[in-house]
Length: 303
Ligand SMILES: [Zn+2]
Ligand SMILES: [Zn+2]
Image (cartoon, rainbow, N blue to C red; front, side, top):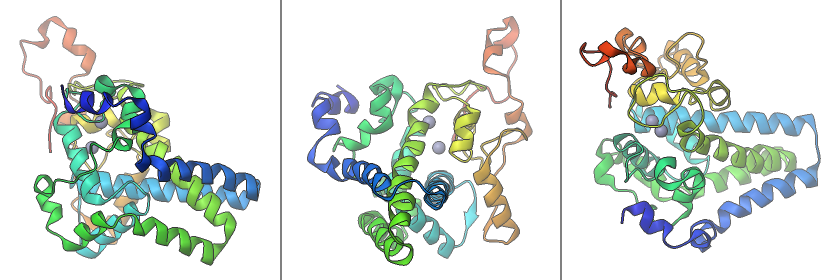
């Protein structure tokens, strides 16, 4: 019995509605009640859209492209700022997030990939795996390069304090509309925006590259998640900071990081080499000569 089977054996009630999931569902209820209480305004919508994209940026530029993949370099103070912003999105701490994500790439869609649709089903991959209390621990030994920073260990341990502080500041500085739309509703939307990477991006879309897993590319999700929708590209060549390999593959996170590099806030943004971009398409493997010629980039590239 693998770790997923063991966790799922407890039954769906124990996974989705154990005592530790109360805050998760409470934030959902708060988001809905808050929107109903304050009513529709364009100011509220602006808070929602701004809050949503700010959170997605910190998750993808911070937790994903920096802490998990080290796809660019930055200073220690900006590293801390990225960690602080990402921790405010209520997706646990930077070391927990990156540690689990690195494991996802090492074992993509294999029997011990904790949030695989193939192994655990759609809703398990979307949110069951972290709602179940089986995978809460962070193994610092598996993420030594980041765990060596005490400030990151502190944030990882006390991650709950950051969003609470943000919620309080938002309310007292900007009022109720900012709190309900820009904090609660934006948090819920950014959660599900992020979770679609694990659920939909391994189910819906096109597989451009032979990445040996179920990862897909989807334009709509790339726009929604600031570039993370090019998930098949990313699984094929993880170390690239740019996940949209072609000019038309919109990757908002990369554009922002590029601008930050002009101001020397970040540097060494890693790009996919030409032979990776032009690697044989997945469906080409069915061609008669595909096994006789060695094809550059026919295997997934790991960090
Ligand atoms: Zn990744
Ligand atoms: Zn993936």
